[in-house]
Structures are given as structure tokens and as C-alpha cells.
Image 1 (tube, rainbow, N blue to C red):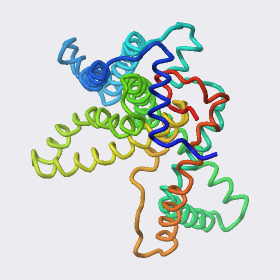
Image 2: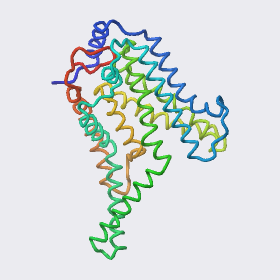
Image 3: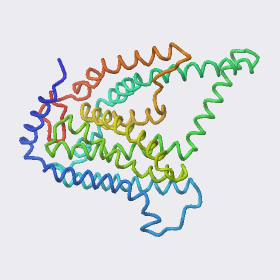
Image 4: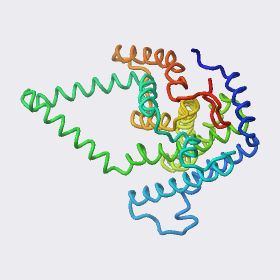
Length: 327
């Protein structure tokens, strides 16, 4: 069975909206999403600018303040979107399903998106594997070449790396707080609003990342200060970041719409944060360049089959206005 086209999805979304008693206006959806994006950024500066709290004494305390602010923003966005959406039942199971917070088909929503996303990082993964193999051989030589010593050394370094990440506040931001709060606000809250606002499916997929990029504009002032207030350098750095966030935001929105699972874009977000920018070319290693090309071909080939809604849902009929995975 072939995935539905964008026209089919748009027609069925409109029919679902009518069956659900109507949606919301486009202006309300856009206004709510804009407010959520701006509030997500503005609240980060509220401890010092509004609450007049003393400056944090350390980077860790500074980040903890931001963690709290991001959590507050996420909760308020969930409440506001629930009040705006035409939700008929306030049962926890029903309400959580609106935001894609589901336990059914969990392993599919984790494994398939991570596997699909990893194809875009095929070159990076091969390069990291080569580096790890070289490091492992070096560790073996340090341990007099004994297999048992190699295993112990590698295990000890792996455990040390895990503890180092667990105690690093920046790691908590990159792998936990930022992905969870951003996916809640920019996917779980905004996409249902835009869908119920009557926007076409693929318009939402490409429109929603604009709000996602707005939340990263605050980095301009930080980069501007770091580069000796050079407008050109700051614009180039932030421009690259915004381009990346728009591309990733479109992909994450696509995963959320297609699967109806928030965990799908969430695990992809964590994976991308861990890997960084993908390696696209390696002049010194042909196998890396081959992996890049093979990964891109595989990603394009599997993009629709690996996100087919039937893999993630028991029923893909009678969708509400905030769901667009009907077939």
C-alpha cells in the first residue's frame, strides 16, 4: 500500500476537521505558535531581567535556571494549546495522544527513525568507527597486546565517558532538556494547532520550522559578542545554524506528522545533537565518501516506507483535525 499523497492528506484532514466539529482559524494558530516561540526564548532571560535575581555564581547554576525556564515554557505551551484545540475529552490518555505522548508502538517509533536518521550520518559513523578502531589498537599496544587487558581498558574508558557525560551540565542540555522541551513546544504543541488551523500537511512541515528557527535567534547576540562584535561573522555563523535548524525542523515535523509519535522526532533530535553536523566529504578516505553517498540514497529510498503511518498506529481511520496520518 502506497503512502497517501499530500492532496489526499489535505482532503482527509479537512474531512476529519469537519467530523470533529471544526478546527480553529489560521490566524489563531499562527498567533499562538508565534507567541509560544517568542515566550520560549524570552523566559530564558526572565530570572535577571524580570525577577531581578542576582547573576548566577557558576555556569552550572546558570544552566539550571535555564532548565527551569524551559520546563515552565513547555508546560504553559501544553496548557495553552489544549485550551485552543477543539478537544472533547480531558482524559489523560486522550489528551496525551493529542501531543503524541503514547506508549503503543514505542519500539517502532524509536528504532525506525533512529535508523533512518543514521543513514544521513553514514559518513560520520564510518569516520568515527575508523577513529575508534585506531584508538582501540593503540590501547591494546599500551596494554602489551593482551586481549583481556584491551577489554578492561576499553570498558573502563567507556564507563568513564558515561560518567563524564552524566556529570556534564552541557550534556544534559544537549541530550535531555533541549530536545524534550523543544519537541514538546515546537512539535507537540504547534503542529496540532497548525493542522487544526486548516494548513495543508506539507505546508505545516515546512512552515513549523520557521517558529523553531525563531527560538534560535537569541544565539546571534551571543555569537556577536564572542566574535568581537563582528556583524559579518555573527551573521555567517548564525545563518548556518538557522539553515540547519530549518532543515532539521522540517524533518522532525515530518516524523511527528507521519508517525503521530513525539518520541520519533525526539530520538532523532538527541541523535543529531550527539553527532553534530554530518560529514559530507572526506578527501583522504574513499570509504567515507562512499558511505556518504550510499547513506543519502538509502535515506531518500526509505524515507516514506520507514515512516508509513500503519507501522506506528493500530488504526489510521477517523482522524481528528490534529492528526494527518490517515490512510
